[in-house]
Image (cartoon, rainbow, N blue to C red; front, side):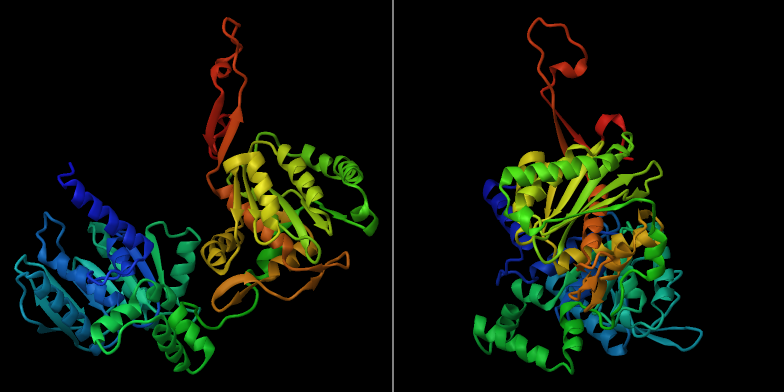
Length: 531
């Protein structure tokens, strides 16, 4: 029951909105991203962060709160694992400061020695009146067994044996304890980055990820807080820009700066999906159907273009659509282009074993907007058990995406492809290749297009370079984007609206649907379930 007054409720809702929206409040001790981190109660959570954003300090606040509470209230021990003695000391001092700020009964910082096989490990300790404690370890002990409580692994990407620490820490989660992994990046070839990629791929359901780059931190008040604490100068936009520029210029290279402050792990280039995985996936005996708009076609009247396109659709595309299994769920992905690149349409089937199959592709080159719209509607109207349409809505593609949304409603997702979108969704796409969950038409152009997904600054995306297709035309990973969006569409829950005729009063009813004007489904069309 809510016992708060209307004014208190309004204040609470205001505060919640500020945290989610990232609004800086000079009267609040913690910044919004720090509060979101503490509020996340995932069993295992990971923070990929910029240097010196104060996340470890916020974690110390949570540790002090947990240590002060009773068992019934959710209190517990906290074990901090850093990489150096200085890090351990800094954390325990921050936790001690928070305990005093909370006005909780806690001992002064003490020291213990943990006996280990290789060497004795210095441990800093705070004991609370509740009986719980915080222990900050100055080294990398792999053996946390025999302990019970939350585990904080700081600078996880820099630990010599993160796997061993996690192995021991994960055992503690059996009894309800939680694991927090906080770190800046240290290249891509390490377990920390692998955990992030696998979590984004949906392979680690109990994990959550927080990404806090320097711009996010500044937008939510980091530099304002620095000015507030140091009291040297008042905050200004110009001052913040100068401060950030100096921060980045102090790094040896731009690559170092991107890794340290923008959560972009170094190294990295080459194809995101290996040639072997691409070739294995391309095993479907399905065609790539192509239409190129000639000068005569594009200069013709709209009715003439419509008639010619309809003739091509009926002769070339319709036979492939008629081959589709009406019992399977289908979705569609599209990559848009008008002149230079290709527009690709990728229908996708969800098989009974949950694997995905792209039976064919449709490619358009130099085709006017209205005829592209005509092709899209022709395909979508004939997809059996259609359940999701994801369209590239960048630039001129927004027109086609908007028109499709008017026609098909919420089933259409207008995708703004960006670095952030690729970062969050590409790992799941790659996992489909690794797990052999995706079958594509056997065509060299598709293999080449998928090879255009490259790692740049630690994030997969479509490389700027062009390749030459088997038809002699330049390509820009067009089919890869369409297949990528089709795959995401097939995995997403979609709203599908179906219209039904209302029976006249007194007329005999043919079935139960006769009285329903609209039926809303979420991927459960025709009683076929989620598969």
